[in-house]
Image 1 (spheres, rainbow, N blue to C red):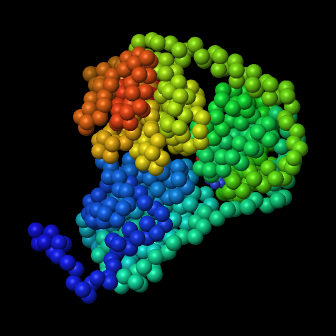
Image 2: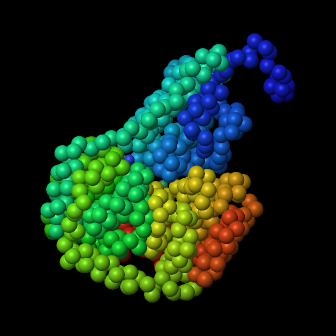
Image 3: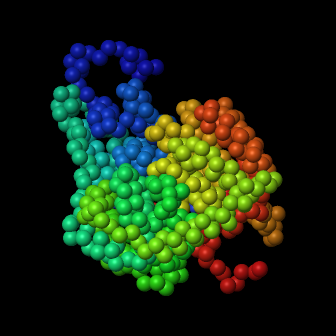
Amino acid sequence: MAEGTAKKQEAPAETQDLTDGFHLVIDALKLNGLNTIYGVPGIPITDLTRMAQASGIRVLSFRHEQNAGYAAAIAGFLTKKPGICLTVSAPGFLNGLTALAHATTNCFPMILISGSSEREIVDLQQGDYEEMDQLAIAKPLCKAAFRVLHAQDIGIGLARAIRAAVSGRPGGVYLDLPAKLFGQVMNAEAGRKSLVKVIDAAPAQIPAPAAVERALDVLKGAKRPLIILGKGAAYAQADDAIRDFVEKSGIPFLPMSMAKGLLPDTHPRCAGAARSMVLKDSDVVMLIGARLNWLLSHGKGKTWGEAPKKFVQIDIEPREMDSNVEIAAPVVGDIGSCVSALLDAMGSKWDAPPADWTNAVKAKRDENVAKMAPRLMNNNTPMDYHGALGALRDIIKERPDAILVNEGANTLDLARGIIDMYQPRKRLDVGTWGIMGIGMGSAIAAAVETGKPVLAVEGDSAFGFAGMEVETICRYKLPVCVVVFNNDGIYRGTDVNTAGSDPATTVFVKGARYDKMMEAFGGVGVNATTPDELKRAVNAAMDSGHPTLINAVIDPAAGSESGRIGNLNPQSVLKKK
Ligand code: ADP
Ligand code: TZD
Ligand code: MG
């Protein structure tokens, strides 16, 4: 009561030219164009969320910090500005930390700002409310971590966080703000002067001319060249230069999952549907913003075949070179600058790759597309993945500016192959870790940051990691259509536990109706049992922009263990068949 009354009173004249930690944090964010916060309120940041909202910052209040963190991470990917996630101390901080580590792993710029307890008590381990040495815990899991103890350092603290997040290889940054900081008062004018507007936060990194020449020499010597576009290329927003380079060089390109759409999957040079062949048979491979990690079988082994390879790699991180295999021509710099420099140095005349190679790639691709086509047209009930995804594929073709969010195992791997993308940064998925649970946070951030309709295609298990955020989607009235591929479980819904009455570990309640979850919060729920029903329901959702969840009933026997990566499962020689 007393607190409420005090707040309503006019500030005394002598305090009117004062500011405090709350206001300085908000002013510093706004000064740097950071106008959206994803988070969960509570001690000590509840008032910060209120005051931020009052100041015009959009504050998206989630049901769990991990989802707010995933939203911030993908906002960073979409905008090239650090996505901001705001949490309370200890448990809220830890809930956000998975997302911060995910952002760092994926090279997405993000800042996790967490309130924390009093240093004096934390350092003496005297048991404060939600006590935890958060800075120390965050450090190994992010690109940089900072703590601000004095209100006059808030501007510098945020400037350091922004630069660390977006410069060089982007990543996650932790900013620790102890409770006491928010109430610290200082002269308003001095406060204003202490803020920093970060100039040129991610400076261009121009490649050395010799590196550019070396790369072109290697490409010129190629008989069967291939370009691999990764999500770093999507992030770089150098879309025109990349298209020009692919088209001028005439080299077939293979998009990694989140680089799909950088050039349309239907582009004549796209080798997406001939992936196995181009990886095996190519002789020179140029990586643009893609790492030779597990997703590319580390650049060696069966996937890459017998043909000797030479690699050209464009990356902003010099230490990425030779991480898995020798890189014959490293080009270190930002992708926009590197690709422009390559285009300039290519001059007006550039010989296309040998026609027997480009024709062979095209033939393989056409063959695979034709093989797949009839499966995508089936109208089976219960649906299989191909029938259901065939319907969604048509929808994205008709609505190429919609954003596709995708997670699951079979639901992910098959959708990636089946749904063509036509525009850059329209496909958001599980990223480098293959993490489940990113879907709802990604969908919310995609809708908020772009204003475009979002289609989230979710395995039933994947959806469950963050299902409660359908309330958030309804509360903010976001144009998100969630399709849950409900096959009663993880990979398949058919496992049986023969040892007792408990269900098998991979199966869920049979016949569950996820659509009812959306209805509980005022959204639209639909149960779809055929591809036609599914298509109608998604089109209606995307036309109306109303939050919608479609429970797509998928044959529990249709999937395979771990989708396309079953080979990564360790096998016990003692396992009973
Ligand atoms: P994918 O999973 O799609 O193969 P990765 O996440 O493995 O992609 O690789 C992305 C790479 O892009 C990282 O090595 C990162 O350093 C690099 N990168 C990110 N942004 C830029 C940029 N603006 N310029 C150059 N390289 C970048
Ligand atoms: N936990 C986290 C955070 N990430 C993970 N990747 C997993 C667990 C393990 N996992 C996968 O790799 S896929 C998956 C799990 C639990 C779910 C697959 O089931 P689904 O998709 O229903 O989402 P399908 O269509 O049934 O294959
Ligand atoms: Mg499933």
